[in-house]
Amino acid sequence: MAPIRVGLIGLPAALSEHYTPGEWGQQHLNAIKNSPHFELVAVCNSSVASAEKSIKTNGLPSTVKAYGSAEDIARDPDVDLISVVVSIYHHYDLTKPALEQGKDVIVEFPFSTKIEHTEELMALAKAKGARNVVAAQARADPAIRKLREIVDGIGDVVYTSFSGVNTWGTPPQWPNSAKGFLRVDDPISRVNIILGHAFDAFVSVVGGFETIQSVFKSQVKSTQIVDGQGNVVDPEFEVTSPEQMLLQGVLKNGATANFSIRTTATAAETTAFRWVITGTKGEVIYTADAGAVFQTPPPNQRIHLKKGDAKIEEVDFGGQDADYIDQAPGLGVNVQRLYDAYAKGEDDALSTIEQTLETEKLMLQLKNDAIWAP
Image 1 (cartoon, rainbow, N blue to C red):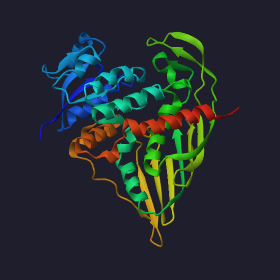
Image 2: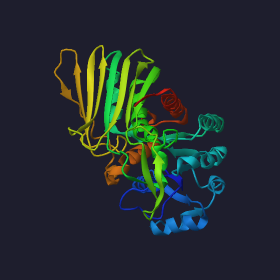
Image 3: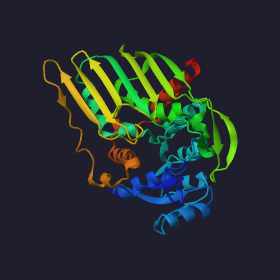
Image 4: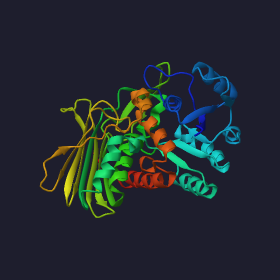
């Protein structure tokens, strides 16, 4: 079978020693290059010159085309799939031309800045018959896929509780390129990124909420914003994005549910994530250690299951990855799994625009209706 021909929108010239906003396209490049199912045929950046530079510095073949506009790469008949891996503020403008040309798309999570944009692009994808994936990477993680499988065998879910630790607090200085992370109403806020990725995986396993309440607490009220050279550009930037986030409610299936993220650099345990799902015929517990955000994924993931009178068993969820996935860098391993699932048509590991719309609406409700602790 011929490889899927990919056009990548948003490829940096190089990867910094420590991840910097705007470089996530490197993880998608690794996923495409490592997989036998895909071929990178085009790169689109803000200009043709920028795309040519990225092609050269990343050692890509001279046959890879360089584009400077989303419209041009979307019109390329040799491109089957367009991956949009840029700042969320540009997702709508760069994804729409691809869908208008009937191209399949993979777009990073969070998907868009406005619910109206998500609804418009969802309708456009349906009208054009374009396959669409939102890169909520945690859904492709083998542990999360195994949880979805297990839940079907523990009877009716009556209770679920998720707790996670976040180490990305608010330091004395913060980069200007990522200041949206510290604004609660920003689409890349701590709520959308830290809570959002894990929350999307949560609802993919146990289903959505019928009713939900949220309680937020912001500890650090301000910080200094610095530019790329470390110069202070805002000495008193107001921080409105919460460090502590607590949700509770009733799921659509009638189960009681709570979900919490606590932010601390001094956690008194190695277990950073604990997720309990209780059913009428059994219970499953997922745990993982500190060391990464939920979607990357965290290290030492474990699943324990008890059904009826049987003993507690540790569930094996390994052996699902193809050999080439092991080549993916740690941060991008679930990106590789997402591409692999896309190529194999394993839709259970993927999120569509339509599914993401439900998550986006819930996230907006959480922000608008939150009770703020002093």
